[in-house]
Image 1 (cartoon, rainbow, N blue to C red):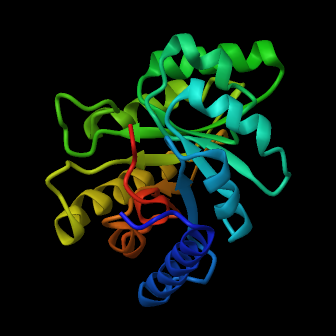
Image 2: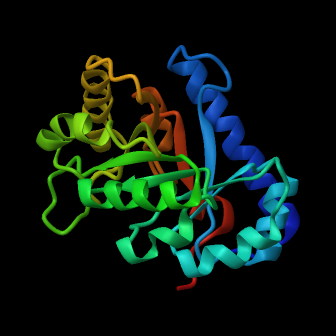
Length: 236
C-alpha cells in the first residue's frame, strides 16, 4: 500500500468524487444526488483531517468506542457523523444525538431502544433500516420479506425518524453481480414509500462501497460508503 501522504488522500477523494459525478451522469441523475460517506474505521485523526480538507463532509464509523474521541475532535458544523457498523443495544445511549444518521437499525427491538433513549435525551434520531438483502444467515439486518411489514410498527416511534434503507450485498457479489441486490433494495424502498406513512421517508438508499459504488449509483444509491479507496487497506 502506498504511503498515506496528504497529497495521496486528497487525490483519492477528488478522484472518487469525480467518479460519483460521472456515475450520476451515466444514470441520468442530477449532479449532487449521491453523497460520499467516508468510512473511517481505524483511520487516524490526522488522515481524517486530510480527507476533510480535501472535501469530505460525511464520516462513517463502525465502532462506538473508536468514534467518540474522533467526534470530539471534528466539531465543525460542516462535518456529519454517520454510524455504519452493527449497533448493540447496550451502546445505543452513547450514539444518540452524536450521529446525524444511524445506518444499521436491524431489528424492531433495536429501533425501540433507539426511540427510548432518544426520548430520554429529548431529541429525534434519524436512522436507516438495514436489510439483509441476500438472506445470509450470518449477517444482521431485516429479511427482505419482513422489512416492509415491520415498518408500520416502527413508524409509531415518535423519537426516531426512518429516512431510508441500507444494505451490504453478499461478499461474493461484485460489480454487476451486486446489481440485482441493489435493485431489490430500491424496490423495497418503493414499496415502503407506497405505504404513505407520515413519519417514514425513503429518500436515502445507503448501498455501495469501494468495489461497487458505481453500480449502486446506477441502481439508485444516495449514500455510498467508501473507505479503502480513500485511506487504503485497514490495519485492524
